[in-house]
Length: 463
Image (cartoon, rainbow, N blue to C red; front, side):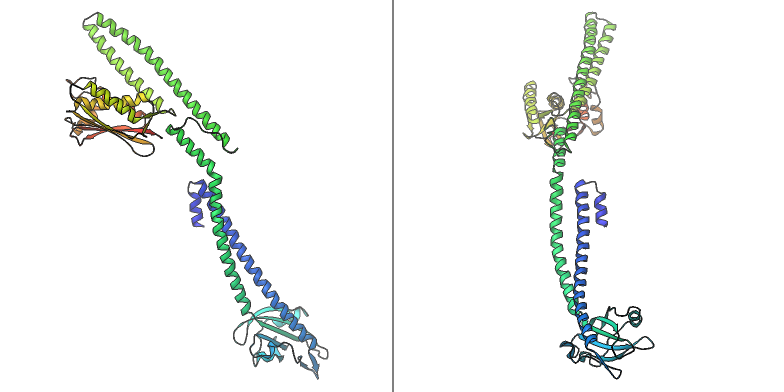
């Protein structure tokens, strides 16, 4: 019961169904086995009681009274003639103190007498003519089944008690054999029931398992919607999930539209301000140009995050990582041709980014471009799965590296550790922001090439 209770507390529907069915089945088997054994024992005892009844009737019928003395029939049973054979009879009369005084007995008893309960005389007196059966011990301490009956014989005023007994050792052995055989049969039946229950539960719950796998495929981008070929009990759930997926996709599309509208609404006035300021040089124009440029960077930053957050909630968008890294490597090697940069990249063909291609291009492009700027000539890019749902993008270079106490600083938006280097200082912050928008992040460390190592944690779509 403890195992059953512990199993029911575990959050598994299949385990609960199996344990409940198993508990009831085992309880039914145990009760059935006990009832069958009891019925078999009672049937065997009834057969013995019937034999003893026949012997008692024979004694009552053929016993005689002469001069007040009771004489038993000369022959009652062949076994009753052999000493301690296991078949016994006795004729007795009740005494004043409620005991039995033997009047005649079978040769099989030799000099012994049959045991009787202390209240036997009283019980027989209260029910004259009705037999009473009980268990006792024989002359050799063997278990006996005894049948006692009180009757009156012609020519005798006092009642006479007739007792017949049978060794029940054979009955006990038969019952034990039957119990052992029944137990073995029920153990085999129980094992078969366990297998049948497990198969039944697994087959019965298979649509639920299929539904779970389909939902996971939708979440990982392997499929767009759920199939609706489910049993009638699960079909409404599949339809509701499909409606939820469609609603989420609609919300994401609306967010993208709003983001695009906002970008257009803000960027155009800012571009006009910058253009007007550059046409009218002066201190005020310089201030306006710098602030407008900062505003444009802020707009780009927040719009980029908003787009990535919206895309990360979408379903069914998958981007091959190897194709993006191959395109980036070719492009950046041409850009940094004068520096002689060599990009060594590696990614499995079946590795997919769970998101839009543009976002992966921006993440990987900024990370690899930063490595190309600071390297001496070598850049290494690796992409590998971190499990079923995430993968790591690792970018290393052979440049001067970065002290540990300054690594967090470069991830801040607009941070530039070397003002002489080209760029706006947004590269690594963009990588970190987009990775966080997709539920991951960026960590910096030491590269085995001698420079900086960047690890980006990104979502993986199923193949």
